[in-house]
Length: 312
Image (cartoon, rainbow, N blue to C red; front, top):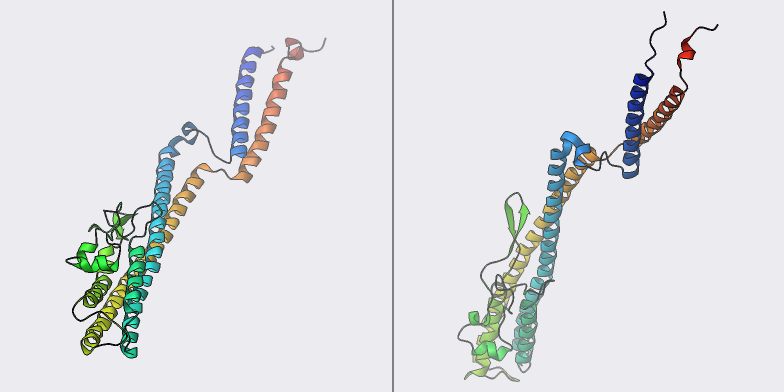
């Protein structure tokens, strides 16, 4: 007895297989062309939540790294400028010492005015955003508000020469930690300005002005100013050293942030990137499978009951 030939059932099964092979081929082609496992969340399946968490963590690390780099740049600039201020304090010490050694202070006030002008220019520096670097929270107006050495000397106190705020700027470096980066004009300039103001006031007073020869009173006064300039120089060197420590610490933080970002990006890559060798092999296999399914489906149309009847 000849069994029933279910041609329609066979056609449905082969058609489903053909569609599945075509879908597999499309997936393989997309993976090879994009290098990704899938281009949709549905294609990632249960890995979606972990993938997005890792991608978000990598983005956060990159953002922290960017802001930390700006702080590094600021600390680098501050290092140069605090060193310059320390050199100005030492220049004042040298000028006073030379005046005493030569018994000639005729150029002392000119040198003092030049030192003030340079110090003021540094303390009123702006950052890349146009904000005053040493202004603290008051970074939209110049922290030094006097224009000349005589203006400085006319103030009731040196502190009145500064209009900066009191809050030093800090940066979030991640993990709930902040690093203080900012410096204040008043912290940097007070001792140097005090020495300059004292010299200017003495020059304008009853024992001045300084000239080609020094009186004993002038010599005694200048002796005290050598020590004052030395103290200003030492204070500025100490602040430069503290800023250098911050600079080095921030560079270490950036290295950690880079490592964290690389770790998370590697995790993301492991989840969404395909192994290209495996993907190409799978693509070739799916192409062969689809071709075979197409050939079988084509042959199905030629099948009839006569193929199963015995020869007459």
